[in-house]
Length: 72
Image 1 (cartoon, rainbow, N blue to C red):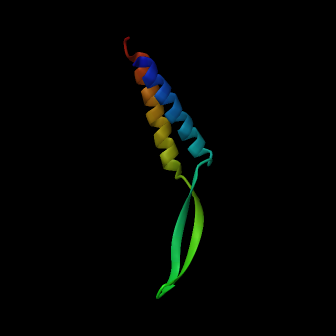
Image 2 (cartoon, rainbow, N blue to C red; image 1 turned 90 degrees about the vertical axis):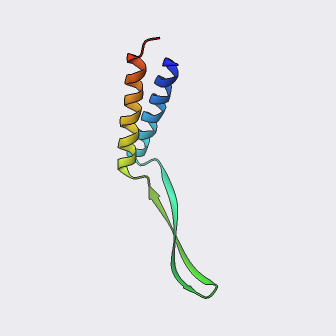
Image 3 (cartoon, rainbow, N blue to C red; image 1 turned 120 degrees about the vertical axis):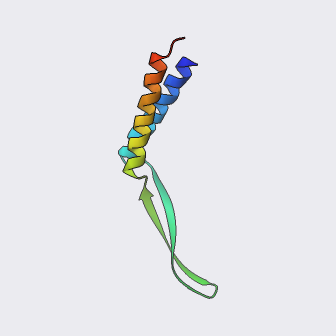
């Protein structure tokens, strides 16, 4: 169980670092205008917010710390 917590913590922390470096993006669709059934849409590529990367880094670091301090 201890090693599992450490591994999960390392993975979450690595995902947090990747998010901070701007490696994760998602696509958002916005409707500009709609007349009847006719729609004008725009797709935007947005990066994952920086606060989400920081949060993942902190949570991952906490899991690693808990894994190391937990007794077998």
